[in-house]
Length: 352
Image (tube, rainbow, N blue to C red; front, side, top):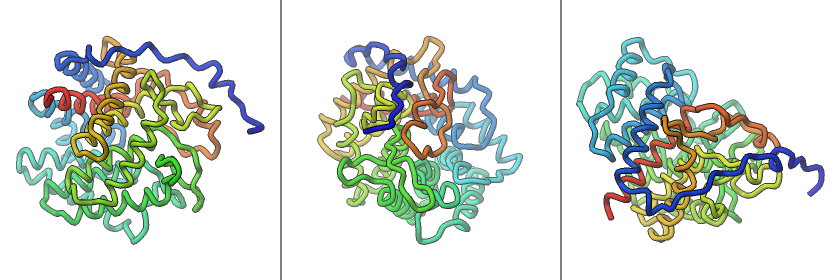
């Protein structure tokens, strides 16, 4: 390769030494998850948007895993926005609706059902036979989670299995555009009809988590299972020994060694949940999941901040673009995906 600029990679801060996964007991996992939850709830989150939605769903999953009641933060957040009126303006505005569907399933309150229907109507008006576009002319992995996971939760809460079918269709369409048959990995997105072969970590987390959500709702979807198995196999093949994937997961020279914790958290959650579904060998999946969590754990501070999570990242047209995304601030998706990881690990540990 010529013309590469590895300067960001050369000066990247190394990962912290991983912890032995055996030390991640039920109590440690629950305590860490609650600290991440408290920090997320104290961030001042107020928008009905994607980062907030990932946090809301993560808070619900952690509460379910610990046996805690539905967090007041989630109820207050959703109630406040329903009272003000939900006005979605992008596919990223859909994922908070997964929390709305969860609350409807928990309470039967028609306000939550009506909120889901409003979002579904907005989405239906923008859906055709092809993959949903994230931006005009661009298909991004993010959408498979932001729209797909919303559809799954609405399908289950409203007893509308066709919504799960649509989530699976969208996941498959995104996999066809973004998937790499040789490695099983997924690219971040396409631009003007051309797939940009940058195998961004968080893109792979979004698609992996969406895949397990779909299979948990309908385990019979063999085409999703097959593609998800190939992806997770590819991710395990590229996992560093310390457990935390780079911002581009394929070891590209310009981003090698620039770790990304939100992607690692999301992939870890998917690995644990895929093991419960026997997508591939449960033992192999859990081993990679614990390796990922062992590497992630030292990057969670005492106050519950998940550090080294990269900022919101638009599609980069060259790999170097991913080497200069800041990762020195707390991010809602870092907190949210951290919650997903610790919740999934806690379920795994509690079931053994």
